Image (cartoon, rainbow, N blue to C red):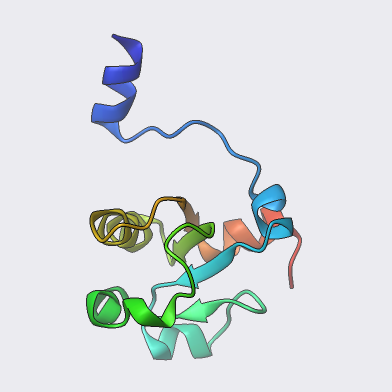
Length: 107
C-alpha cells in the first residue's frame, strides 16, 4: 500500500547521486541553451526538454544512469518521464541544477 502511494505521488527511493556519477552517470540539463550558458554543472549535457524527444540518440545508452536537472525540478521531472517512456531504465530526477551541484560537489 505504501509503495503504491509513493508511486502515485512520484516519490522515488533515495539513491546516492555521487555513486551514480562514479558509475559514469550522465547529468542531463534540460534548461534552455540561454539558461545553460549562464551556468551549469561541469560535464553536463544540455538538451532542452522541449527538444528531448527528438534528440534521444545524443544519450549514449538506455541503461546507463542519467540524472536530469533544470532550474527548479519541474522540467527535469518531465524529462525523466520522457526518457522512461522511451525505454531508458536508469533515470533519476536530480531537481534544480544548483542544488544538485552542491550535493555532488561539482563546480
